[in-house]
Image 1 (cartoon, rainbow, N blue to C red):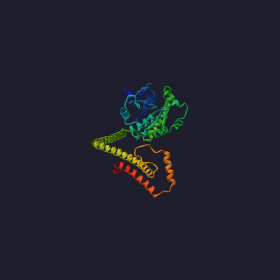
Image 2: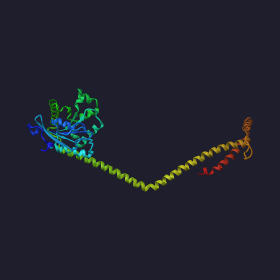
Image 3: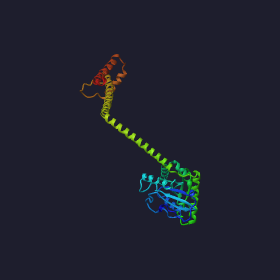
Length: 354
């Protein structure tokens, strides 16, 4: 047996049927390797204080715990600092083969603290990688249990609805580890035995079965189908864009002419409206001027002399208002208005005939 699969005790294990196979999953830095060491009661996995991910490949270690054979598979951390998401996905998938015929339980490690967006993404990543059926074999393992400082974990969970829902979705429930007490043999053994009892409950709920290679292949098939569907949809979108671009390119000269024609029509319409406004202004002014001249209020403007003074115009208007209206004076006013109005009509005849 290789060093990565070595046993840790001379004590004979019980029957193979009672052995347990456990896979550790979680985000980088959540204490997966330390938890594996706590379970096996020895430094089976490399643990280092580092800003970078330490575990890059799946690693299996076995030992005898409580007179039974225990196999623990450590996996690369999700959101690995060196491996791409595709590399992590491929490598983590190897854990099923390492625990053939399959793991009895997946322990998702979480540090006690804030349940961040990355934790939620890691949870969704696990479901996507192993399929929704993996939740029947999943338990949340809270690390850094010493941070509770006597506080009940149930009270801690109630403070975050997202975290409570996350834990509830894991059919195996949860457990708390204090990995800092590995040297305290009795205390460490107690928390490990409690964990193994919960793992036994997971096995019992699943009828003594385990997560199988067939379930992994089914999940991988679903991933491939989703990937192909996305690529197909993306291909249709690209093809549609290309077709639209080709059509647009062919229609560009016609569209440019259409835009030019519309712009010209807009300019002509604006010019027509301006001309109409000018016509009406001049017509009203001319009618008033002609009527005033016909009534004798203003002298005819022949382009010579000074403008009639305002005071004189007022006097003539007052005199006209005081005298009785005659047909002759009315005819003169109308005639003057018609004369001046006709000049304006002739001046703007092109505008009116459009």
